[in-house]
Length: 265
Image (cartoon, one colour):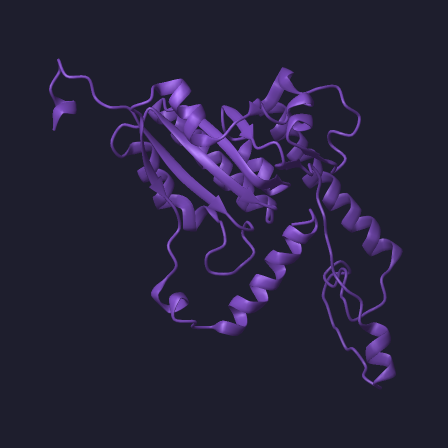
């Protein structure tokens, strides 16, 4: 009530948004623009926050969903005039770093992993196994590129070249985004855009982070000891709480664990 009385000073409030997990991996609970839309809108607009703090712990995922989420964060920050701070926990890599770079400033723990500014495509080849089992793969297409990288057929040089071209375009988009957000803060390091990762202070050295610091003390240093925090995070659906669609969730969980395992987590 008192914040509506002109001569009384309101207690500053920071909205804290938790971004935990893989991005757009297809499972319920994965980070996506759709799943985060309402939460982000509330974080920026409810209660007139002095800042939005992003708690990030993500190994990456879909480049498109990373871009959509990051773009939404920037649009809301501009519309509301609210500054954004990112606080990296275990990892903000690949798409996770895309989200972090949507912030105005990035802070990390001494042991946080940041970077992996690159694009990866992983799959498998099962054509030898099918042949040994006496199975024949039959695919009919209209358009010579329609059956690119079919895991049940031998890999071709043409498919590899086409995939390399697509990955290069995505990589250029990622590099452009980071350069536009971090600008002169980035060091002239030849490994910066190779998919390499940096830990803690080394990430600060190359310009991927602005400093070492944790959410509460950094926000208190900026907005005073009386600053309050309002937290937002994704809630599991009722069906998921009771274990519905266990097979799908288990498969998605394995895929997400594989993403984290790439960084030794």
